[in-house]
Amino acid sequence: MRELVCPAMKILLANPRGFCAGVDRAIEIVERGLERYGAPVYVRHEIVHNRYVVDALREKGAIFVEEPDEAPEDATLIFSAHGVSPAVRGVAADHGLETIDATCPLVTKVHNEVRRLVRDGYEIVMIGHAGHVEVEGTMGQAPERMFLVESVEDVAKLRVNDTERLGCVTQTTLSVDDTREVMEALRQRFPHIVLPKRDDICYATQNRQDAVKQLARQADLVLVVGAPASSNSNRLVEVAARLGIASHLIQNADEIDPAWLDGVSCVGVTAGASTPEFLVDQVLKRLEELDASRAGGSAGKPEIASLAQVDEGVTFKLPPELRQ
Image 1: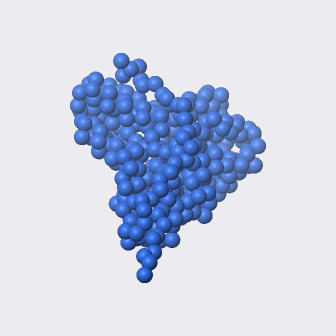
Image 2 (image 1 turned 120 degrees about the vertical axis):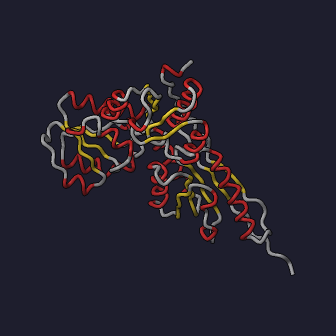
């Protein structure tokens, strides 16, 4: 009897995926800080939301703390890519810490916009997720004049002091799609609100979500490699799910459930903006193993293809004290 040969699974890689310019910059800041000042260097909060990145930097001598006063006086403290409030900067100064700012320049742009609106007499609505460290840093720029909304329902309940002088900013790890309905609700309720420009949206968030939309046209399943605490990684899962494609967030290859592959001929793989590429490589290897196993060894190796390469063309300068 002729042996049946199962067709190999196809794996389609998203482009772009993984590290963005802000994450690259933040990691390099910690590494250069260790070279310049020696270990230990303290970092306020996880430098980026990925435990593999954090653990690697910890092995090199970085110590992660939640508040500046957890670091010894006169130590070097690095602010994470998510940004901090003036209050946190004040605590660091009062504690005598030498600080280096690894805040993503796109987050800094939002902070500057908040301060400009406040100077012009505006109250500000922020679209974002409560408790996210970036949101806390941005809301902390003017806590007495800011309101946080996450949904259209929040907009309906919102109470402001002056509907004529109202501005809006967003969490950078949200995309145009994420904020469209909330912005429209704000526009309907507050016709004079000053909404953010499209270019205030993080390019990396939008590009990675657009890539997932392309994956969803061909894939039966989308795997997003990223951390549970990573906002942009969670949004990638949601994008695929909204398009009717099964999707899962995994931190590493070991979290792939073989049952997910039942009936799947094409798997799309992408990664959040703080995910190192070696984790993606491990996922590809595991998918090959699982495909061979489910085919009983009769299938060839999976075909691995990529979406067209995208040159995001974005780099950010290091802080002046670390450029040499």
